[in-house]
Image (cartoon, rainbow, N blue to C red):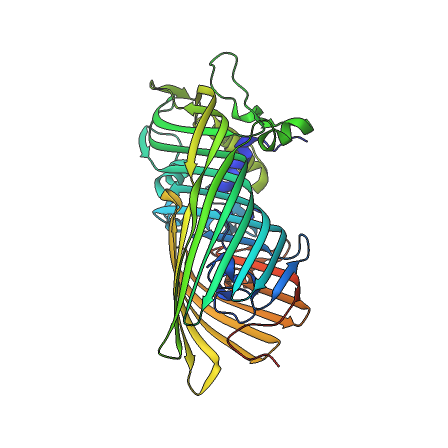
Length: 476
């Protein structure tokens, strides 16, 4: 199994953000106040499910989340009856740069629940689950895109940009959760054993590029580390990492090595509580992913301390046809800009997880308690990949087996409108929802790629339920 060239992965993330299909797990936040929703315990371990349950393998809780302040329209422009990139001469520098933010970011989350079981004992609820999680993120300053755009033209210029960040993290999680109901107070905790598969974490803190028609001189400070089944190629002449020829290991034993003889092990905790007060109100607070992973067989890389020559964006000056060729050429050129050399191999590195805080308050209507309104605040604590969101939800449970929630939110990535429906009959629970419809309503028809900001979170699930229902509304 051969991996896509790393330069193309970089350019797909950096310049074509909305085509990604892969930061830790972000659950369906629109469903936080949803009656009968099985997996709200993953957002707050104090919020126990309505019934005991067992998830349908691979279909019990499948989620994909994307947070980005950019979209396809940032990179592609209709000009003269055809679609061109922002690099095309027909797109002015001012027009192209107006579409970018001072800080441009993409966070993508995949959560695949392989197995989950929950059961009640008295006033306590227990959960056991195994999940596969993938966490990817990239951050780029506006000056980086300005350099790429204007660097295609001749002339002597000097450029400086910093805070370029790239991260990919994949791992398995085996978790046990426990919650207890004490009338007006609910408390809960989850302990999670983490088994890391692969991680790439790189940062360029400062880069200076002096451009002329003869040569470009680059001096930069940056570093990163790689752990996992990646063969790192080196240029035989310079000794620098050859990003174009790095690839995934294809041998089955190599692919399984991080989970067997080269284990990357970690531990994390989720803590939560909820309080009922003044008859119609509930307040809750949770902190997720307090922990770390100890990565083994780490390869460290750093940018050289002395300046080096860069051939410039030469491929783009040649005759390239089509958007795909243009982006591919750009990826190959930029591989020479991000020059790194190995600074250590076979090392160990302990990395803290990115934590998430949820704080919420819900008010049930005195005239109809099956209607409620909730406000959820979410803070992602992840350095350069941090973000904040406030989400207001309207929640309705008109009958015992059906509930729905609608929400609107504002965050670092813009505004969003979401909805989720949940059928929780005795014996089966089915739900489907999205944290934002907006990106899905304006897409390129052929590829279903959002034109505007891609900021959403899709989730669906199918679970088998059993036992007596215990919830806020009496089940007949």
